[in-house]
Length: 619
Image 1 (cartoon, rainbow, N blue to C red):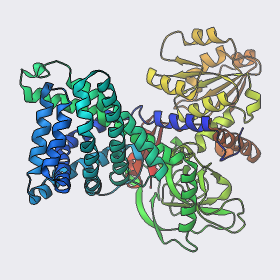
Image 2: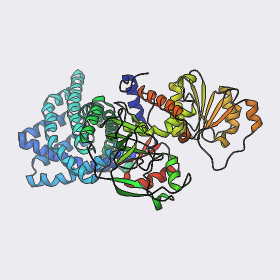
Image 3: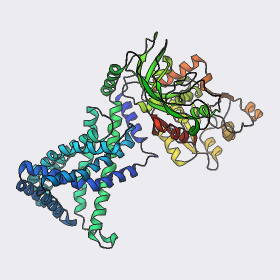
Image 4: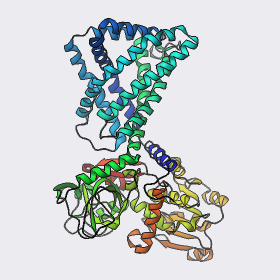
């Protein structure tokens, strides 16, 4: 184990890779890339025109035309690409200034398309998305002529090398790759900085931008090879050459945007995990922490229990002050558990006194500390559990006040997404596994519902403790999630012969983490024996009938877990286990679906309808 904040590089890399990987299952990245491609078809040609026009005014039209001629001369003549570049350049350098200003409008639409796509991968709330994307693209348009200038300056050197072939061609490819890498990476840094939502740190921008740029530089070299393929691309379109050319270009633009979106997501994850960035966020949070009342805040509230559409509303409340032993947290993520909607629906109790801000779990930054709190400080990132347990200020708000012991410091380098995912699911998993990782070393654990939130962390905690894990799931898609969490064996319980398949792996398991006792009784008892403990953490619509004699014959132990009633010393042991596993880089976030605070009704309904992964609000 390592101390919090001193996460090994390999563990940090695994955590980053896991977070990037979990972005895409269930996410429609193809649709986002297609949307960006649509805006790109509208805006890229005008952007190129403006850039070439500006370079023409810097160097003179003749110099630009000559450089483009050298560049076009080194390209394959197929598909009309060289002539298209010559026409583009002639048009650009001959434009009057008023036309250059006019074409900035369609060019700016590309910024809107990119920002809308980036927004899906950032988890950052945004307003006026289209206008901000267009304005950001105009900032990139200021830089673009200088990048075009670099490419054109290299064209007279590289173009003849391409034309000569042989080793000259190889040298030309190497030089062209590096020129394109530097220019396109600079463009990506500008896009991630000015067009994307939020503000990424400089280190993440440079690493992510230039890393993505290296991939795109190779991709564009492949595009040049594509131009040399002697295939009539208009054939699938009735021989119409313009349709074939546009379709082929659109396909390459689509693939390019897939790579750009992937690179942007990697950059966002790097920004969350780089320790200096996290430390800077902590200092910034400390500087922003108000000495007195912070004014008003937005919060989701309900005053009576019932359906979400009828009782939930977003209101302005006074920002609460922390009392003795309490802290105030500026919420950055509010995670939703099944108990949250069940409590709001009135399934676990009555109406709240005055009002209730829902949601037990979340993540944020300590904003202020109350009297007697010595182990928390303003600006400290934390993850939260039990925020709404006996407390009216849950995490579905811009601020929450809660007992300090219900916040856990989040190590530098770990993301708010991971912190918000932990809470009730991870601590419940630790309790179901017995609360002592040493007892699991070499044990065999069966996790029912391995793709669920509790199942996910039961798998990861058990594997980190040295256990062998068998997980049951209801589909191949969920099976992939369980395997990604580390399950050694995954069994689809909807397929025939489940009991036989599990018994073929082991005759007895040491622990069973159970989500549906009634449905899984036959399997549980088939692999139970002396000292097997079955921990049940969820109820079913109908209470199961227990086969007492079979339990007696197996000498198995059946226990039920509701985290809110766990003894304080046991809860402390569970928290310590989870905290150590986080510090070791052993826990990863679930697949996340984000909603704005204003969309709290839709978010709760998504959980109520069985959403896979973790649904979160981003206040």
